[in-house]
Image (cartoon, rainbow, N blue to C red; front, side):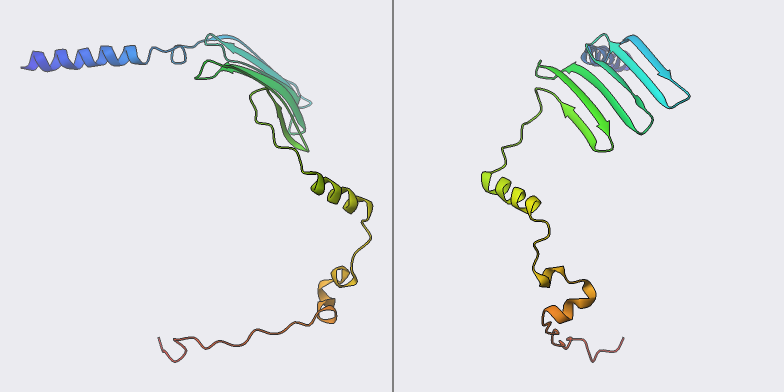
Length: 152
């Protein structure tokens, strides 16, 4: 009985090991380069045996530019390049979704707003301390709470 249990566990271990012998699990680094300079600039690049590659260069937390590539689980090649700076992260890749176009009426409204920045109604131009002079504010009525007479 003991032999049967030991043999069963060994057989399960062998089949489990074969299950995880995928290119991702057995990937190795083919090349790797990394340079960091005293002025904060840097660059790195690597390439693996399962087709993943990446590279980036930049200066500290000021800006960076790079790219990476891999094969999706569906077998499609994915290539992405990017920049990152004070305006955010800007990726580019054929696999990324494209937003719908902005409707014409929104574009016209944005253009009008940009062309007329000073045209505001007086009531909207008032500061917070002047709000009572611009609009009449009616106070909310006091509401009696159900537990108003309850003592804790």
